[in-house]
Amino acid sequence: MKMRKRSQGFTLIEVLIAILIISIGALGFTKSQFSALQTASDAALRTTATVMVEDMVARIEANAGDSLQGLNSGYQTGPATLNTDCLSSTGTFCQGNAMALHDLADWNNLIANYFPADSGAIGIVCLDQNPGNAANACSPPSANPNPIVFTVKILWNSWQNRGTSIYDQSVVATVEPPLQR
Image 1 (cartoon, one colour):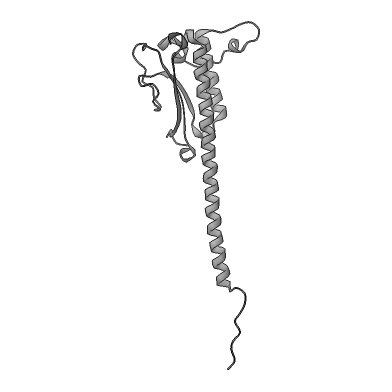
Image 2: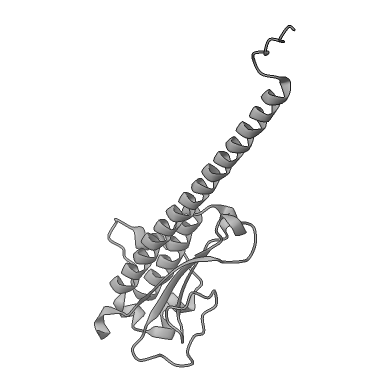
């Protein structure tokens, strides 16, 4: 009786199964890399927002004369307007209310430049009855609180909610004008 020689090499089915297993592994790797990039992007935006919130806190502290006006402060009354006198090196200066309005406009321009357009990022400065809450809306008091505490917020959509009105990311800080401390 003659024994049949065992064939060597791979059959077509074995090759297809190997390709399928490698493809599933490659898809899993690609998905994990994509998720890592999105997480890194959100972390970078959080860092940017933190720096920008601290920038506005410093601006409010530097403009203590206006910020002590509370509800009448330019940080509350709007509309935010860039003022070339606030950037002047010719000896003209803006002060108080004009500086506050300029600060708000400049800060909002920075937010627009550093956040993706589809993130819907917004910056909010307000006197809030619930200082430090991360909600979009502020609930201004009916009269100046004592002490005056401004809430500074930046809200935006993470990569998961881009293009929607769902703000699922925020950085919030509170600041008191330094002259009342």
